[in-house]
Image 1 (cartoon, rainbow, N blue to C red):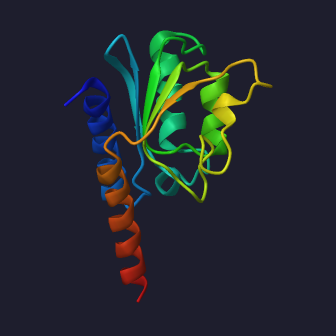
Image 2 (cartoon, rainbow, N blue to C red):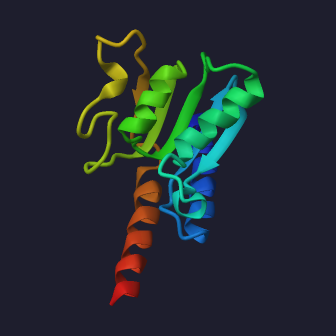
Length: 153
């Protein structure tokens, strides 16, 4: 297991926490110098908050842990491609690199629908790596939504 796979496996653990809470199972981990700074998982339903995405929770925790809003020299691991709101927060917090498990063709803003992280008009661009533990990250989403559909029948 390489370094990216290791940290993505930690993001998957966060996604499982969301899954157990009947939240959309997305997890995020922020790392600097191969050390975990913060973690997050979706809590929109629990908190009744549209902004309670895994990435935003991890970004807020990282800012608190590091004592500032600039998360330079950090990598964010996300099990699913970040949405436009999360991509905006990634840019604003100056995260250097984003590692994505599975892409999101319906809401992704890091290459699927649009790539906000690499628009030259912004004053910051982000290195993107995709496909890390892709099948595992996609599978937890498939299982969650299959169970949701079956429950509705």
